[in-house]
Image (cartoon, rainbow, N blue to C red; front, side):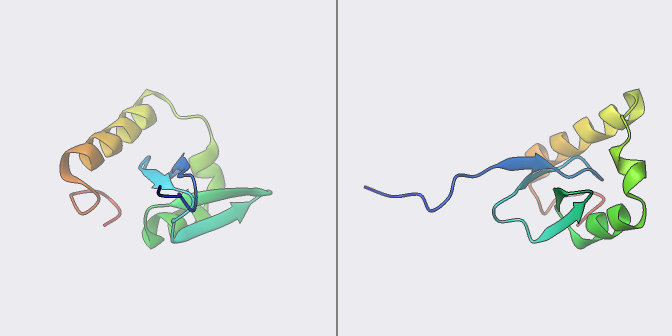
Length: 85
């Protein structure tokens, strides 16, 4: 019997929309009492400079970009083309 040491919890990077495992994420930032997880240092730095830009509700174009980031991750994996790697 194999025991899991943790249960993977996924979060969405507020900058690029990529899914991030909150347990193993290397990039984390706490803003107004909430922890945000990021896929790369570049996304974390962008968020730190202007959190409000990434936390306001996304319009149709923002939702499209988030969906595109998730599709790229599924198609190419984490090492594929994206804004963060």
